[in-house]
Image 1 (tube, rainbow, N blue to C red):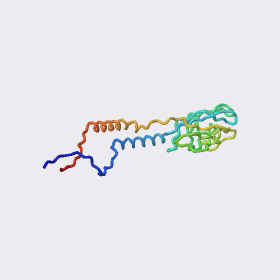
Image 2: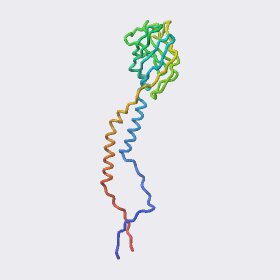
Image 3: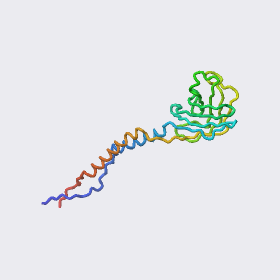
Length: 206
């Protein structure tokens, strides 16, 4: 009796579930982390069309991190009007995501009779950016040392908005890991093309 080996396709056999390769999983993690870090990055905000009731204007920008209530890179300038105008470069401790409050760093720690600028926003600043109208504010002189009181004779904004002008930067972590992911994917493809698959067989007896 002759016995021959015949290669036949398996029918009805349950196919094992395909698992994601570790390099593919790592790629997904990098993309998710990178995206979250991009949205969480501090935002640069710019004053647009800010005009006071005396005809003066305010221009400039600052960077704000909503996660930590952190103001940096402040460069706000007001023009001559009923006040001489000033350039502000430091936040007041009362400044928060909906209330801008700026001073001049060189004037402290006693801010009495030194200028200040504040803006009341129509919505909270977030790390998502956007456009936020200014609904109020005041520029005047500090009435005491901590500048939590104002002298009379200031001016108020009658129009203007806060506009996000920053460009999200790629995640540093993503940039560091992506080359390694690419190398893993390349090795996986090379192994797949160079490997040979052994055909499955069953014994058939005539």
